Amino acid sequence: MLESDKVEEIETFLKNQKKGKSTTVLIPCKKCNETKKIEINKSMVENVENFPFPIFLMHCADNSEGKIEIHTLIAYLDNKLNCRHVEFLEGNQVFITPFILYNSNLLHVYCQR
Image (tube, rainbow, N blue to C red):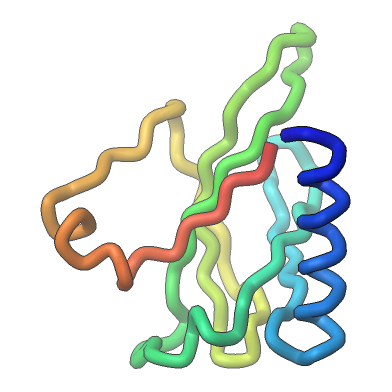
């Protein structure tokens, strides 16, 4: 991502937070003992019928050998967008099923680099 793209992304994030359109959610990763901050647009959860609902997250982390690992998590958020539970998925692959392809509006994905 170019530096100007990062600045624009941060500016958009701050504007959305000021307008109350988004909120920051803290997601703990037990694998690397870090807490990740993600931005969730409130419009993303307007049509969610059941809570807590899952979102998928991926982030990079250094392991004990100095190599980069990809951590894949499923976080469950309640109706106030608080994280209630996190599951760590082993491996680096996420499988996209036909159900997800045809119902992509039901899938909430966040990837942090």
